[in-house]
Image (cartoon, rainbow, N blue to C red; front, side, top):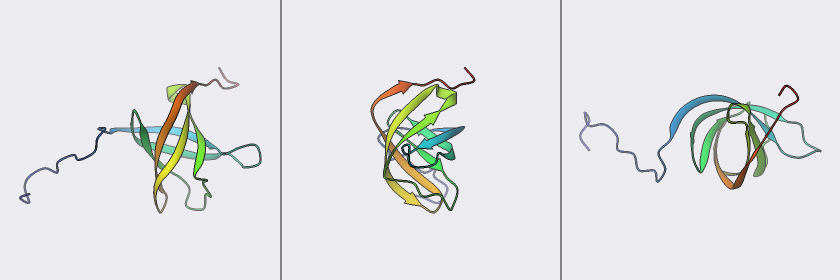
Length: 98
């Protein structure tokens, strides 16, 4: 690749750059963790989490803008960034404010 050529996308699923607030829900014994969704595609997303957050390998990701809760598994971690894969069918979600 020449220096002035644009980078070629090698991913199987093109990402859409987004900025959405979300909540990581890891179960009744763990506190919810606020995060942001930075890019997303049909099978996963990149999340930004607080640097001191302890995020388990599997969790539910509630995204109010999508009105959906995704079942997720962590595929990679880099500082406060997480790459997650969605599995199973997303579940419609509601909040007390709805």
